[in-house]
Structure formats: C-alpha cells, structure tokens
Amino acid sequence: MRGLETRELECFLVLADELHFGRAGTRLYLSQSRVSQLLAALERRLGARLVERTSRRVRLTPFGERFLEELRPAYERLSGVVDAARDTALGRTGSLRIGFQGTANEQLMRAITAFRRARPQLDTQIVELPLADPFGALRRGEVDTAAVLLPVAEPDVELGPVFSRERQTLAVPARHPYASLSSLPAAALAEARLIAPAPPAPAYWRAAQAPGSGGGTRGPEAVTLQEGLTMVAADIGTMLLCRATADANARNGIAFVPVDGLPVSALGVVWRRGGATAAVRDFAAAVREARAAPSAAA
Image (cartoon, rainbow, N blue to C red; front, side, top):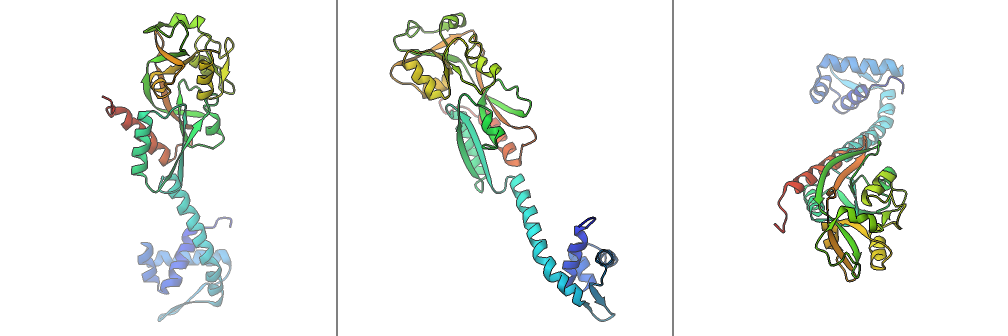
C-alpha cells in the first residue's frame, strides 16, 4: 500500500468498464495520454501488465482480470466508508446529540425545532445533563453539543452563541422570611444558605451558581435541578435560578424572589474544541436565529 495512488486504481476500474482509452478519459475528465500514464504507473507498481492494447481493441490480461475481481469490491467498500464519513461530517446523515441543563427553555426549543425541520435526515437526540456535571457528557462523547449555564472556562471546550440572558431569582421555602418580598438585594444572599451544584462541576462554575458560597462550602450541594428544588421545599437551603427556569418549575411550597444587583444568568452552546461538525455548526446557527426571533409571549 505504500505510495499507492487512488487515481491510478480509479483509472484502471474505469478503463476495465470501457475497454477504450478515449471513453475512459472522457469519464475521468482526463486526456487519453494521461490515462495511459496512470495505467503504466499502476502496472509498474504491481510488476505485471493489466491491459493488452492493439490498434483495434483493448482487453484485460488474465492478471488484470484477477486484479479487477479483487479490487472492485474493496474499492467500493473504501469509497462507501469515505462517503459515509463525509456525509456525517457535513451533517447529512447520522445523529446530533444535544445536551441541556435543568429546563429546555423556549429559545432552546425553538432552535431544536428549527434545526430538526432543516435537517430531517438527522436523528436529533436530546439528553438532560446533571446540574453538577455540565461538561462531563461532552468530554465522554455522550453528547455532541450542549446548552449549559455560564461561565465556561474549560480549555478543551469551545463556547458558541450565548442566549437566554435572564434575571436571577432566589428559590426559597414558601414560609421563608424572604418569600413575601417583591425583590431581594444581592447582599441578602450572604444569609440565604445557598444550595450549590455538587462536584464534579468546576469550583469556579459552582461558585458562579451560588455566589459567595465558595462553590458550595457554606451550604448543601445538589446533583440535579430537581434535587435542589426538593431541598428548597424541605427548607434545607435556597437556590438561585433564572427567571425562565423558575417559571417552568413553579410548585407549591416554593416561592421565587427576584434578586437585584446580580449578573444575569445566561446559557451558552458548547462543543469539544476541534469537534464542531457541520451539524454542530448548523445547530449553533439555529440557536443564534432563535435568540434573535421575538418571544412567543412578546
């Protein structure tokens, strides 16, 4: 296989079909002399004649017939592998696994719906990610892309479009002193016993979801969103959530109080660095378009 030229093999296969140098050249968009050169190079590589040519006809030698019989199925299998890989890379076939944290909000669902309509041949899968492990499934290859809470400062993870910028709210038990307030200053979080995401989420990321908690050192820790909300309802702690997630998880026993003075919560589309296939890029574009589109509630 060393130094093997696929163009030489393709030339021989077409010539074996046509048994005519001119017609073979036409199919290959090559001159007749170039077809002869490629055939001669292959024959030198193999050490035997493949074709007998006279002024009246072209035919395969016995060696050429045996070589053709073995080459054609192998070449077709190789071509199939290359074509399938290209189609997958271009997003024409295969699947796209999209991870999300907590709640798939309106913007994310608009993007997924638009992507599926534009790429019906793809098997689009949606995978929930644990609150405590925003990047693990991506690294393990269990998802191709994901919508995760910011910040993202992982050297092996690339951040795409940022969307769903929302005011933060504090989830508290219904009987908590803060529950009746119309809003809450950020300084009050120092007394709120915040629930932080558990490891293996990075410390910087955990601290961002529970500001002032040191990444969960002051209060309890939760692995999933629902675990955290259950802890809130049980008066074990309080939890910061964006407005959209709070609305989607309204329930008896929990009140959601807007917090003033905190940075907005935001989601970002991420993928493995160097792993942006055409399908991943198309999904990121769908998120950008969904971000720009007016909300259904507007």
